[in-house]
Image 1 (cartoon, rainbow, N blue to C red):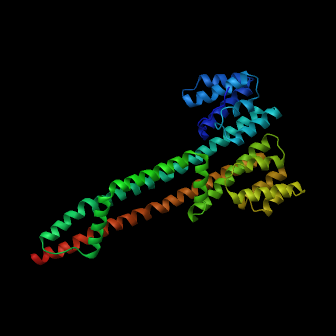
Image 2 (image 1 turned 30 degrees about the horizontal axis):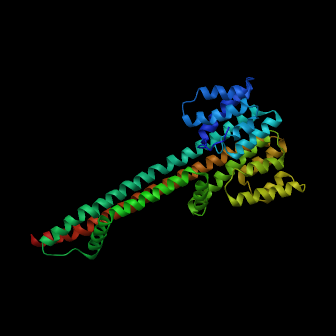
Image 3 (image 1 turned 90 degrees about the vertical axis):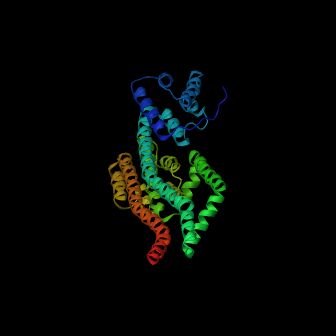
Length: 351
């Protein structure tokens, strides 16, 4: 059967799929039967097509890893690598359970980011709409009033009016450009390559850099928890978990850790020397290594960094909202005062 490329599953869909697979595999149901059961309960045509290809491959005698690879692009590379490892180690239920928790954490983090950014964007759009109405619709009325009174608008008011005239004249072209930019951003956010470009651009912004670092560390720690819990050694865990991060700086540090551990350096020392984990999280990792419970500690560290990213984002939005309100309110006030104060002076002189 030809393998076709389908829309990738999002974090929530991956979490649901993994949790249900873990539950059925733990109950002794085979992978082929589990996929068939899940397929029957789906309503989304895209997800049905994905599991149909997986089911057909399993019926043809292929491994679960090969079957999940059949619908090209539907499952992330890291997900497939973990399934391959779990299948070879006979720990598929454990791997799927760990992956379910991992993708659920990523879903929650992404949801928090979207909800935090949505309100400021809506507020900016509304305030800009008010300003556009003022300069395009209201300002020409004041010009007529000034003309009837036999006087002229001050330079600031005249400049605002000219801007409104220019915007009105080229409104269709401006809307077309805005629509093209919005469409380009939508395309970027819907593709892996686009998301990587946006993420790389965001990492250079001062207010977003710390959030991006915490998110990258959360994903890396999450991957380490899953791989270590599944029985992989340190080198394999570092390699697989390192694929989760899109931060070039963190990838370089992880690769340096791999090289050090390959030459006999213990993992805790490698982490410290490369400054991967710091503060309380660094101490937690050291305790986890000494106590032999690094997989559990890594899961806790992943949650800590995810919470840190969420808090930083909330704080940034909390600072941004009043600033935007103040700036846009001042703009509206200046526009109104620029025409109202001279007009009030003229009316008082007439009186």
